[in-house]
Amino acid sequence: MINERHRSSVSNARAYPGADANSDHNPVIANIKIYLRALKQPKRKPRFVLDTLKNPDISADFCKAVFENLPKNKIQENSQIQWTNLKTSNITAANNVIPKESKKIKQPHWVTDEIKNLLHKGRQFKSDQEKYKRMDKEIQEQCKCAKEQWLEEKCQEIERFKDINIKEMFKKIREIARKGPLPVSRGIRSSSGRILWEPEDIAKRWEESIASLFHDDREADDDKTSSYESGPSILKEEVR
Image (cartoon, rainbow, N blue to C red; front, side, top):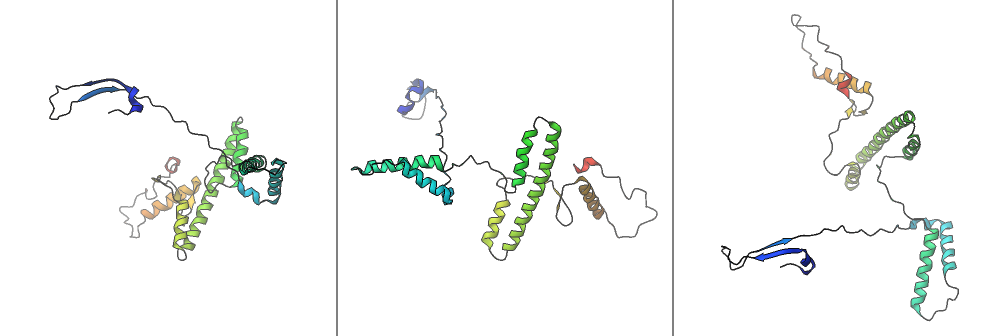
């Protein structure tokens, strides 16, 4: 009943032949204690950036290193020894000449080199809170502009491929679409569809939206006219 591998996990087992059960089998009750052990994942060896061999200088250095690592005596009776020497020479030359892939950190597609430089520069001001806050604000503004520009470019590409290449159009859509449930968007857009970031622009957009909702072309009744037609002013808490 128990696999031989888990045989030592059974601490107690008893059969009950006198049990009142509608079966020709005897019920067995056992106490089993299983010890779980975390599997050790083998460390992945970093790969070589083979595209760098397209560079003539690196390619020449690699060939030179391979020939230098080969044994001087090239005449070998056994082909297996020749293959082992060639393999060892190539691996040694690759470790010394060809760079290895670094650990990739997933970043959004719209992150530019300028934003990366700002992030690296901002880490240097960790001790100075005032400079760090100013740098963080600048990074946030750069990220917003870069993301908006990237989305605008992708939307233009989708519009361009709409009537030309449907397959390419859906490929561009998948680049900007997220997997899984999408969060609720809290962005406020202008009448032209542009995302607004400044509080003054957002407050003005709210004013335009509310005015359009309560706009009435009918003639006003003088008897029911009140001094509260304009409504109260918009608070800062309403646009946060």
